[in-house]
Length: 80
Image 1: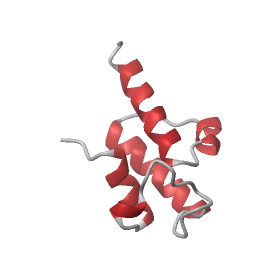
Image 2 (image 1 turned 180 degrees about the horizontal axis):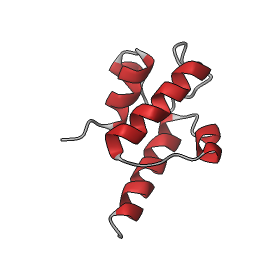
Image 3 (image 1 turned 30 degrees about the vertical axis):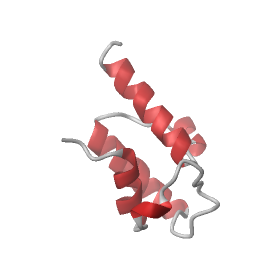
């Protein structure tokens, strides 16, 4: 079973899961710096079997945006 988006974010950024809320953004979490962001994008690609292009990498700076993006990509890949 795949890990949740929140679990991946918490693990990649070395955060407590309780800190990974819908309102959390790159600018509001101490561990979410540029290197952490790249690591997070790689973890999401590996976990969900998706590709995140450069434009998306630059725009995925909140938990809410990441969750929506992953859900949309999975839906696209399943043809639904």
